Length: 159
Ligand code: MG
Image (cartoon, rainbow, N blue to C red; front, side):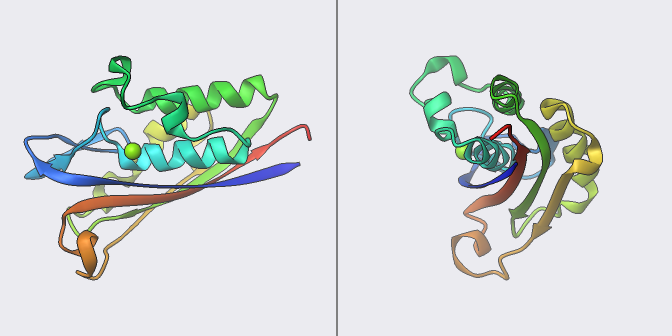
């Protein structure tokens, strides 16, 4: 039985932080603030996977009050979601995500992001979709105050 899950995340853009999206460091005057590396794309994908498996959200597995997760690469969170799939005798079918960012342009980095996500989840490149859109200059995303990501995931589960 294929189960689907949804994930959403947003982090503020601030000066003095690296911009890490899908495990790729992207040259940009600002980066995302957060307890970990604030990789909003990987966080949304992680929540989609956890949701597909009927598990609690990323904040439950990796509380932002726990110093162990301070500054860590969010790849670890995806690796944990993949481990949870193994525990449940599930098989990740695919993930698909959309980044919402006014700047920078994401397209040049999409294949590297897909490679990183696929590797962390132990699935093939073609099972990872990553797309990007702007927010047409509207609202906090349009004013470049933050970057958001939404994701869906499907996991083939025994029941
Ligand atoms: Mg997050």
